[in-house]
Amino acid sequence: MARKPAWVIDKEQARRKAAAETVWVFGLHAVRDALANPRREKLRLILTKNAADRLGPEVLANAGIEAEIADPRSFPAPLDPGSVHQGAALEVKPLDWGRLEDIALSSERPRLLLLDRVTDPHNVGAILRSAEVFGAAAVIAPARHSAPETGALAKSASGALERQPYLRVGNLGDAMERLKDMGYTLLGLDGEAEESIDAAARDLGGRAIGLVLGAEGPGLRDRTKSLCDRLVRIDAAGEFGSLNVSNAAAVALYAVTRDA
View 1 (spheres, rainbow, N blue to C red):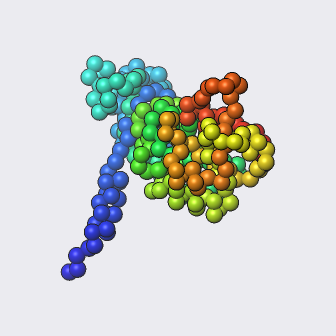
View 2: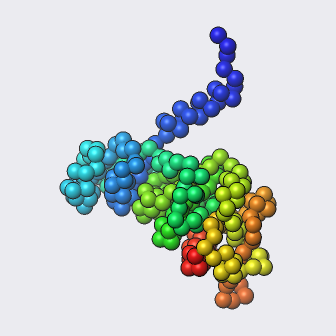
View 3: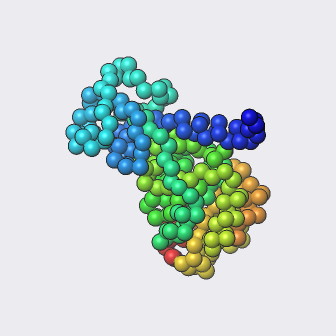
């Protein structure tokens, strides 16, 4: 019997590993939203008596999973010691939002956020909240060197992770090229850019736009920057001043949705 090529074996192992991965969502708000999400595969629910009372009988009756009532002094969920779980933890499978093309082409409001090596889960959680508020079609990040779907991210997203597509792609540059082929104009956020995002937004009007943001400090990588159609800045009132990446995402989204 012929032996499988190494690349086939590696791909099968990666698929099995991904299938085995689970996420522990914690905190009352994040757990409540995950329980209400029919897309979520729910595996284990651990609650203190107080947390169960706060979630309420209706939420638990519709959760599709029976809760384990735990002693708050020995909460059994495998969370980091500093996690503020509020007596609620839910083990789930990561969400599968489908293909980039399906989301990018089906959106009535074609606005996307692309994150270049933004690894802080609190920043990504805040970005997901802004994306939901302003109606972005998705937040896209590379599978490596980005914030994975974790309990900390879910808590920071305050429920948005359950509703706002968060796609992690194999290669961000390749995804950018595919989006350009689909008619998207990619605007890279760069504090040194000559053009303001307000001017670009007015010029582009209702066209499909992808906003590309880099990590704080290093900003956009060279290849990412080269793949952007235009580089734009967020104007500051004074000579100095800058925004962190989550605030910049919110301001940029407002600019390109206001003029859509």
